[in-house]
Length: 310
Ligand code: NAP
Image 1 (cartoon, protein in one colour):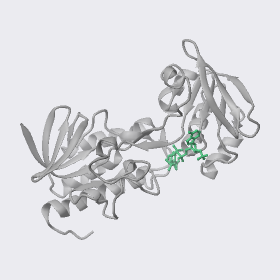
Image 2 (cartoon, helix red, strand yellow):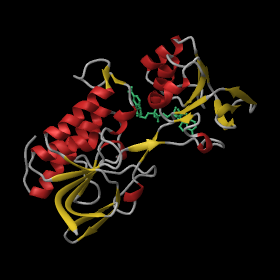
Image 3 (tube, helix red, strand yellow):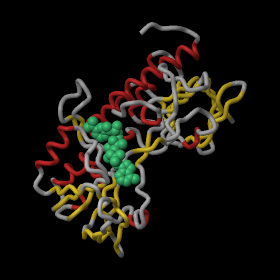
Image 4 (cartoon, helix red, strand yellow):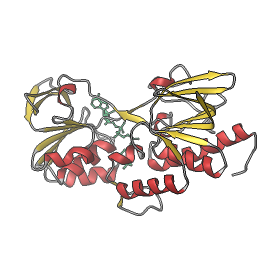
């Protein structure tokens, strides 16, 4: 049995939900496929300071509550399944979501991104036993302990700042001699007494028995190795797109991000992409929300064959 809907939206983060809201308001019949939980990266965030109009220090959990009430208030249909396969055929797109089959006229991919792994010895063995990719989720377990954050971008610095209020000591370990993070974050970082920044340092191994006990790091200038005793390692070296299942469907760049035009259309007429899964210059909540809206209106124009001015 195949259920017919006008539009499928893959992903229930900000981009996918924004697309669903705009699709609903334009009268498109759509379903959102979300295999885990509504909210995407908001689930991993603490507060939001840069979404104009939301107010400084807005708590991510408050935004999540608002999203939930929007889903129920607008009667958006969320299918709690992961789409495993998408095929193009004469009638449209066939989607398989854990055994359920759908036929849609259009598809918006808003599948987001996932945390990158360092790929060093011990990392995989200690996930959940001291290795984490989310300070807001796991920081609590390291109260009064010594931890390291790996990376030099906004995420790494935000994680280090968050952890410095919980942990005894935070090492920020970066492979180069300059941070990528925004200057206001760096200023806060340098002012914290319990954060030590180790530049030009590369993690070689995460070690322990039952849980993490230390890491080995190499000085990239001298080649010397040293051991840092600690209990937690937070890896914040960026995100990679969750687009593997679309590799034979749409064009992607060399890093796997989906390539679109300015209307967010992919190389296929009936498929659009928005948010972190898409090749774009800025990955923020606010850009994800605006892209979801653009993708939905592009889908509306294509599916209904009507033009609405914006
Ligand atoms: P990012 O900006 O891409 O930074 C990744 C960091 O990890 C870089 O410092 C990079 O080093 C390092 N790195 C990458 N691969 C590594 C490896 N194999 N070993 C060691 N270090 C490695 O990623 P992000 O910080 O996760 O942020 C993702 C996006 O979200 C960015 O666009 C960011 O601006 C945005 N964001 C914004 C905010 C905010 O505005 N408040 C907060 C969080 C995230 P190099 O510098 O040497 O390349």
